[in-house]
Image 1 (spheres, rainbow, N blue to C red):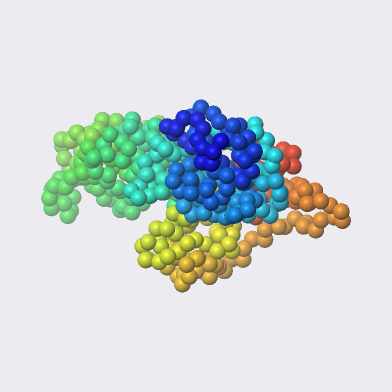
Image 2 (image 1 turned 180 degrees about the vertical axis):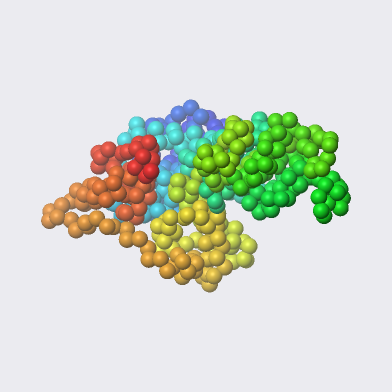
Length: 473
């Protein structure tokens, strides 16, 4: 087979690039990975691989680590700079824990030891192919790159599931409930749902329920007639009438007064509004998206939220995940925001230093994506270099000492091999973290995927998602 040869159907929706300087390994992997709907591209060297990547932009790359003209780590960095959405799997016969950690931190999706086990690799590639197909159906921003869905950035399982749910629901919903912590991007999700809905050409009207004076709530939503109360000097349509033919986004609906909730329920049921002080009603055609960071079920139990309104809204519900639940998206979000602020401030900023990136990885992000955006906006403004460093971050991040990566015993016993020492560290970290693999990975300062990979390599049990959630909860 020739370099940059193609296998499979040229018109396939998804392509895989294999880069290896060993022709035998290249041929073996290309044949082993062939499957319906997947185009295999091959390159016998790092530079040829990068040239082919720049021309074809495959969403999946399988690269050797040790090559004569350029290392696989350099290939990984170049690919991540070009398109951080790419799934890159690094392979090497020269195994070391340090290079695995470095590869994962630089954006690799996985790190494999040669000879590669074909069965697990095919399964891993299969999942990446499905993810790539999901992303192909997501609308991208003009001029945007990477896995963007209407301005939202992410490729973690939780985010891809949310993207898929939005696509399925947007065409059919009449009312919809968005749940999630403050700063997760519920307003952005609402905007995307509107743009994908049949009323995309109509208005997208926003009301922050926590910012409205209680006595003016009904007037704001439903309007009023002249003389209906002191100061009502003329007829005024409410936001429902203003949003006719479009979408009304009610942010922080958990702060809406009970009396207004009852009238909102009637509007949702009948699609009719009655202005304050009026005798007649007006027909409206409005889709309603409500959002909250509160536990509405608890609010119902405390008589602060109407149960019937909750069930009317939550028939269609989308949960927007915390940044802590999608930490694998952190490098992608960092690149996205740095590129945006670099363009905004007219600066050439190429990324973060290792210690700055490590500090962001160790932060808990209680303010979610909004906090990350603010942090990187501040840092991009402050930096005098082409790279954001620790001193460019806000004071509260610089003032907090980075968490100690290793709180378990590090000293290997006499005669202990690297593999045996790694096994001891994994077990000690799991014990320290109470079995929570995410916490154990943070203790060792490696990514969760890298931690799971090491568990598998050591033939240690890998907790499933339900066990991890239970340990975390």
